[in-house]
Each structure stands twice: as C-alpha cells, then as structure tokens.
Amino acid sequence: MSTTDINVLEIFLNAGLVVQMVMLLLLLFSITSWAIILIKIRMIGRAFKESAGFIDFFWKSRDLSNAFGRAKQLNYSPVARVFRVGYLELKKVSQTGAAMASKTAAAEEQPMGFQFTGIENIKRSLRRAIDTEMTRLTQMVPFLATTGNTTPFIGLFGTVWGIMNSFHAIGQRGSANLAVVAPGISEALIATAAGLAVAIPAVIAFNFFTQKIRVIETELQSFSADFLNIVERDILGIERRRR
Image (cartoon, rainbow, N blue to C red; front, side, top):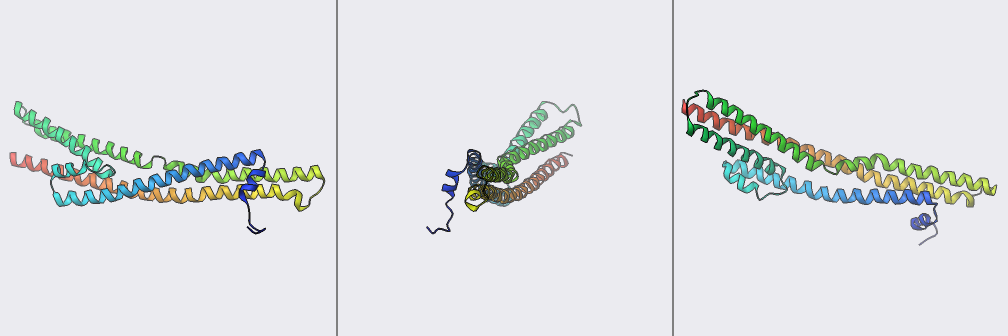
C-alpha cells in the first residue's frame, strides 16, 4: 500500500467515540438496505415471471377451473393470488345461487338482484386481494426511502463533529498546522462519504422497486377488470337463456 492510499479502518479506529457511533449506525443502515434490496429483487423478479406465465396460461386455457389449478402452483405471482381469491368468491356466489334457485321461484326478481349482489361481492374480494398484494410488495421498501433521506444527514452530523474536534484541538494546542487539524478533517470527510455511500444505492433501489411495483399494480387492476368482465358476461348470458 502506498503512502497515498487511505486506510479507512485506521481512520475509524482513531476517530472519536461519536464519529465511531455514526459510522456504526451508517453500517447498520447499509447492511439492512442491501438485505432488503436482495430480498426484493428476488421477490419482484419472481412475481413478474410467474405473473406473466399465469396470464398467458389463463388466456390460452379459457377455463377458470384449470386456471385455478395452475394458480395454486404459483406462490410468488400476485396475479395468481388475486385470481384465486376471485375464483373462490365466484364459487361461493354460484353455490349460493344454485341453492336459492332449487328452493323456490316465488320472487321473480330475486335471481337478478342476487346476481348483482354476487358481482359486488366478487369486486370487493378482488379489491381486498389487490390491497393485500400491494401491501406485500411494498413491505420493507419504505425503509430504503428512509435510508436515502436520513443517512446523508447522519453523515453530515459526523462531519460537523469531526470539524468541531479539529477546532477544539487547535484551541488546545494553539497551533493550526496540518498535523493538528488533519485527524478531525479525515473523520469529517469519511463520515460524509459513508453517508452518501449508504444513501445513493438506497435511493436508486427505492425508485427502481417503486416503478416495478406500479407496473404490477397496473397488471393487477387490468386482470381484475378482465376477470370481472368474464364473470359478468357469463352471468348475463345465463340470464338471457333463462328469459
């Protein structure tokens, strides 16, 4: 190692207690942020892959029961999980409607009113499922925004403290030569650099994940609307055949 190389570990060990605590806090933020980044990359990547495969299978199959069987095999697909919720609610509505039809036909308008209620129940189930999936996808992501917003200021605090130590050393020794002020300035610069090094990847990852999650949310809304259209068309078709 040449004399111009910077030994960060040595600077850290020779720094004051406050600057060391700042550096350790930044290290904790960094480790947590990178753990979240790796987890979310894997999670969102699999969500995209499995959702694309399920949507393709759904439109090629055109059979809800087959699509449900396929959806049960996909644990990382938000679209498949939303479909499972909608399909199960549709089965409940269908079973309840069949039971009502077999009992009596005393009220002529009851089937139409029941069908409307059933569609509303399916819509509510899909909305809840989408909200659940969005909560799952965004989990831990806000910590990246917190890291990006706070760590530069934490590093700045270490910077200010290091400069304060430098001026304090000047006051004690009555000298402003480089040997007196260099340690404190080194602490200050290292703290600033560490704060930026933690913040920049966190901000980039937060923006990246936010954009990807928005794409998935759009897919969920579109698929939910398509699924409801299929259900409504089938129900209306049944009603027209009865008439």
